[in-house]
Amino acid sequence: MHIGHVLAILGAKVGNIPLFVFEDNEKMSELRSLISDIVERAGYIVEDIKMSETGGTIMVICDSEKGISSKALVKLSRKILRDELYDQKYAESYRLEVSSPGIDAPLTLARHFKKNIGREIDMDHHLEDYNSPLKGRILGVEDEGIEIEIKNKKEIKSIKVPIDKIESAVLRLKW
Image (cartoon, helix red, strand yellow):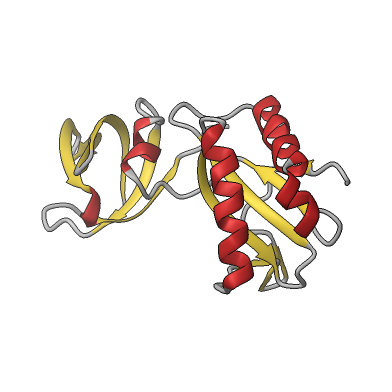
């Protein structure tokens, strides 16, 4: 058995060709179920599981409501690698990479917004009263939507945005 690597790579590409693709077949379904069970038993959430186009790498993206540390990612990687079924079916043929979504990952679910309350975002949306994109700070989150603080015509105000009206949202990084 080899030790997996913890990487902060999400959406890696060579030129315009993605390194990771989703293969919806029986083997991928079994792998997804196996890894999801291990990760969820450890108290974390599986954001995504991908297999490289060449089939040599399994990429597991994990998170929690409060984020995930690199130490936790290493522990998860070891738990997966030590699983008997994973060891028998995948360990010799695949390299395992366990990662967090990364700071530039899109915010798509209420829990993504919730763990980023107080942070600034850029958001494309389908609201009629506001131009897209909006720049604002996340004030609060409910299952059906988020509340953000925006500057609108030189005034600062709070608006509620239903999750289904959000086309895309990412954190605004300040350097």
